[in-house]
Image (cartoon, rainbow, N blue to C red; front, side, top):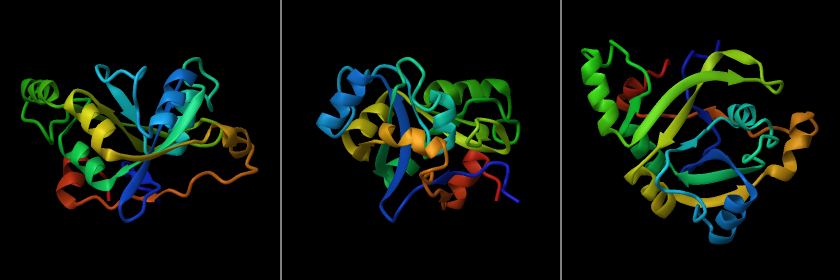
Length: 189
């Protein structure tokens, strides 16, 4: 049985792949620069998703306006874990925060927001376990763009074949979080 909350991702010893969907202008500029650049805005929260199928659900397999291009972004595992360490859950959890005000203060202070949403299957139906979404803002966006991204690939041309089951979806495994981070994120083991 798959644990209720667990990060599943494609990763190697140094990097982890996250997904983002953008319109053509942002995707073209990012691919040319090797990282996100204008017209991408560093002043807005940007959401990264380690789950390929959750990204497909969110962007409608690249068919939603402004999300026609899906980028597989390799970022350093060090950066990924650093972002998670400075994160705050998007909802109040009494096992992590003594009261609502403590949580709201942590939320205001954190440049990274995390939330657990139902994982999806190829058809977009919710599965009985959750995947992590990571929202970066402020200095976390700057570090992501300037330090943590090590490569990007436009996977848009493969989406139709993957959706039809002709090409395999990315192989995602349980991401090996250090125990303090797993506790911080409410990961189920």
